[in-house]
Amino acid sequence: MTIQTPTPFPAARPAPEQVTFDRSELSTILGLYGRMVAAGEWRDYGMSFLREVAVFSVFRRSAENPLYRIEKRPKLRNRQGLYAVIGMDGRILKRGHDLRTVLRVLEVKLIRAI
Image 1 (cartoon, rainbow, N blue to C red):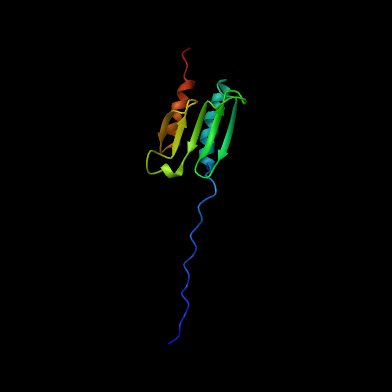
Image 2: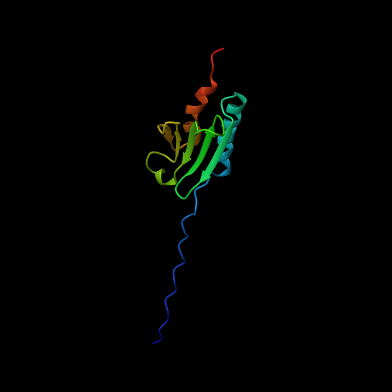
């Protein structure tokens, strides 16, 4: 009888180093950003890609705190939802599984009475 060494299982893929927005998500976010800049509401943005969350921050001026933060948290995918819009004071304005429906809370600002 011969002894063979067992075949090792393939190594599990390591967890991603950081969470990012994919191309379609960025297209949706930047589309809203462009409309808000054209309306004169927003002027600057910043993006942060961390280990647990990706954040798109919107500023009225670049030297102040963000007006809104659009966050993507993959760990909340099966719970409250992957995406969230957070206000300046830290309150969660909208949370959900679909980015377009979550961003509708910000599009209300574009509707103005004439």
